[in-house]
Length: 292
Length: 309
Image 1 (tube, rainbow over the protein chains, first blue to last red):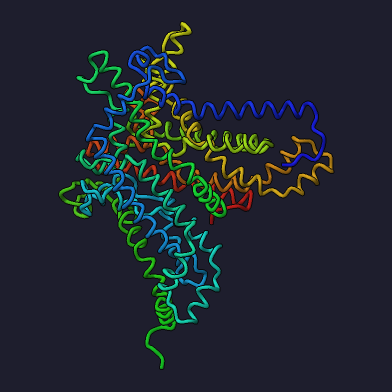
Image 2 (image 1 turned 90 degrees about the horizontal axis):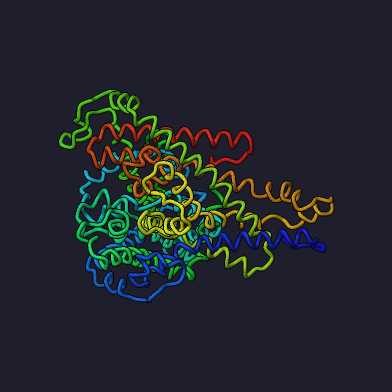
């Protein structure tokens, strides 16, 4: 807010205090990521001696070289790319096609359809019945188990509908209809071309979701060859290391450093694109806040 | 020429025909929700049956309420319900204090460069995967070479096995949740704050309101509707949210404070193969969830006039 009057000493002090608190908050937020990065490129002695706090010591890229050579990491990267691209394409297609009818005020059946979708946000069959149905549909142990059970999210459909409602005037489809266009033509020729913002928002939210997902793989994919990156990260970061990995000094340092390296490998792609795309993420939050 | 059938069916048919392309566009979503959301609801029948994968959902024999009785009388019931409620309660509390305070503080900053920097940094962790977040927790708090224990050791304090102590599970779980999401959750409040009419502040100032009174009578009422909507939405996912993270964080040593209904369902059902029992426990979870949503929505409509439907 603009200050309309002379600031008193007390208020100045308060402002400094606020700046201090916020700086500390920002540092605490970014510190773990910097710490992991520094460790990922530090020498063995420094890692095991616990002397790396903020800056790397005895810089070495050997950890990255090891991880880059791992076929497991590459294969899981490929799998993640597959799940993310196919899954997101499917997500966006389903979300857009249903959000458009939902946004049309003249569409009879609109509230019925909305209830049909929104109800799944309030009540669900839960993990076990979903697992059994996915298996009965023959998706178990196939790549499709990673994308079909999460092919749409009610929340994204709702924000997309809200966006279309407030950005495409009801008179546009009306007049196009008078000109002889049907609803399919209107959707593909008029609605989709002017919806690049909401499409971008959807692509980002869905893509991050697929990129970060591990649970579907845990329950649906027994074959490690199909595992996404997050499952490999889970094995390397969270499950206890295998016996032979924890013997010699170099090996222990290597295992520890590789953990830091894989954290970076799993996070860097998102951190790299994030500055360019953050305005779309924020836009998505804003549209969502308009109306739940 | 008048078609046969009742006027209602007639009108319905005509409406369907007129909107046929709109329905066509909705088909993929309708099919998706049927297959992956409504069929599992039908699959809940197994909670009342003795489900065998070979017989299938329909042909498995009925079992009545035995699985529910078994769940309600087991030692896991009290423990998982307590943990579910407590973790959600703490999560709820910190979700609606830290981001709001952060947004209010940021709103007082006049230097826009500083403001932008702090905000950008604050929501970076939101996009980090939970596997990585739990990996970070382990890297920070493990006993052998975790940063915190190294620091304790240097200070001459005895190291603490944080990751396997039941008493440390909740602080670590909630703390990492705040760390990961506070900046992101503040975005909405910041937007709501900028939307407050400057004239209201001017009027309050003319009336002699000091900074605190402006906060109390202009700022907070200005963002209250946003807070309420977010609260309702939060309650809507309360019973499920976080279980994928708990699954990565907990171990037999921390079940006492970490095991929630959903993780228990996963362990017994997917890992253990007790499908019917786990489905019954899961159904209990879903019903509580539904009751919570209905309650919050009704309360909100009654007291504030803001509601989801």
